[in-house]
Image 1 (cartoon, rainbow over the protein chains, first blue to last red):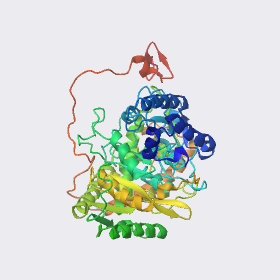
Image 2: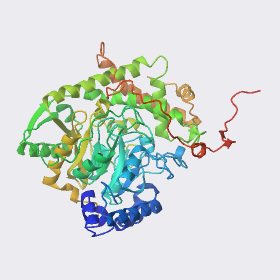
Image 3: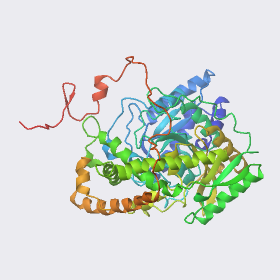
Image 4: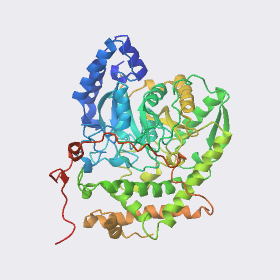
Length: 470
Length: 93
């Protein structure tokens, strides 16, 4: 197997046993990048020089028998994560030449854990999108079939992992931006509980919804990466002082006796029949393994996208107001189409005469959506649902119809409104393209989600496939 | 629902090209028509949710700590003079 397609766990073992060095591992990632980046458009900026230095340093530490959770592991960052001295664009021309003077908290934590930063991954500009096509630097292609989108907004991050350009990648999920691309690329994507991971230094989209997570090949890698990034941060007042448990501790406890809820509102007309079949197979698997499957209802699901498309653009219009082209970045006419749409939509719903009818109303419906989940979790431990109603679509298919694009997040956005965690795990392939399911739980139940995901993964092993058979 | 795009763009300080106004008008109206769906939901006596952490009044000790140097903070400004951001005049003499 090619080194860059190893899981973090496998790579750590190989490094420890001196089968290869961190520099070898990094070179393997850069081989893939050089071969395919021009075509797939995964990275906006590469930090090869800095990465090589970090890898050499890691090799020295390994030689001295030191251990850190991510020592010598090449990781890609969504280009929303501020990196000191390395260009950070949010995939927008507004920040075309912006070089942050500081690292985001998560970047600092990853570096302190020994990670090697490969580069900055493409995404929808400002994380506005479900396909990756809203990047001002051109779309990222899906390596499983290059005519198709890889899902967004964390498009480049997801592809960097599935294409073996990095062993893991960070992402942000405001309304599905990690779970959707994970599902479309055969990767594992975690959207942690809102506030579990610090947002400090990550370019803000919608501050009450933004969750900071990551992509990995395996569930176990996802858990060990969250061990590094989670926790209270003095620089982000929305990180609750909830203890960070070892997320990998309960991984192999199985699912016997767990109550898993199946929400009927997620299996409606409009859900691709083949996806429905795959999810039902997964549900049957859990039942066979001793979980109790319970039908539940989340009655306000059909109002989630309307609610989300009031609250999110309102917060976007406020967050993007800071880009004045004076202190850093370019002038406001540089904003791309989607950013302009969202700024205007948000400005409208917050404006005099419309605030009560739109914004306040949406905040009330948000309460009902959150209560749906609270009520469900009184009956069940976790919920299983499709991530997306459709498979990846063709590049260009939805670009002229923003509303149609928005509706692809119909099963993803409610989770952000409720602030709960969601884990997307691969469950197979349909016509050659990957598909995933999402596992949802109450606030701060990440350990349980990893445990449920792990049990599926070790019995199916979809993660062993990559688009190049390497 | 029709939306006055030129007015909203002005509020948001967003310079639009002439041909853009019409496009946004139809796209934003379609989205607003969809959002109208919320009118079906009964929300009397329902509290608003603006965040989900339950945290209130988060404070820290009022202790000074190191921050960016002036040079670092100014490093990305395209126009500056004597350590100040330089902007266009907003008042006429």
